[in-house]
Length: 168
Image (cartoon, rainbow, N blue to C red; front, side, top):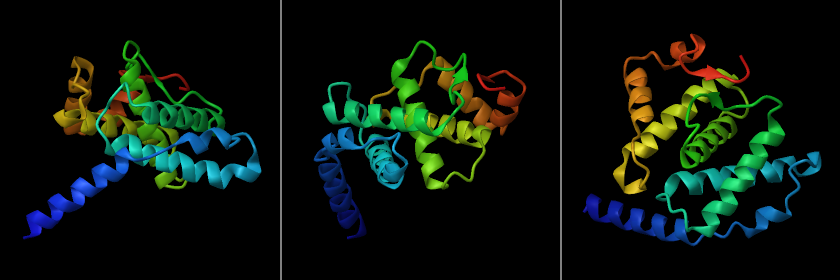
């Protein structure tokens, strides 16, 4: 019986997630400090959507939500949050990295340091891509990052410049 309710809940969640409309984010001025709270809330809604549904390049709502999250991250951070030499050739993974970075930053209300957010974002991307139903494959690079995560060495690798930050 529990499985039935769980299945029903998941089906409804997927249905509602597909029914999202993010056209309203275009009206939010991210640079306007009076709209900061609204922008942060919209960014979190976008992140939740983007991490809850499978990856589909043709999804126009995904495109709008991803663009808004990228703008929010750029407006909030004075430094580049991307890691050098990570996902350079894969725009889809870059976008998911930014989404997980923003989601963790919003979820922790700005309490985490950039390095902690980078680690959490990489862990999020690996977790997302590990689920084959999300339609983003584990690349060779992600498999290496996954090994670092499993060994508990990801943060140290970033610090040691195995994965280098553009803000070091």
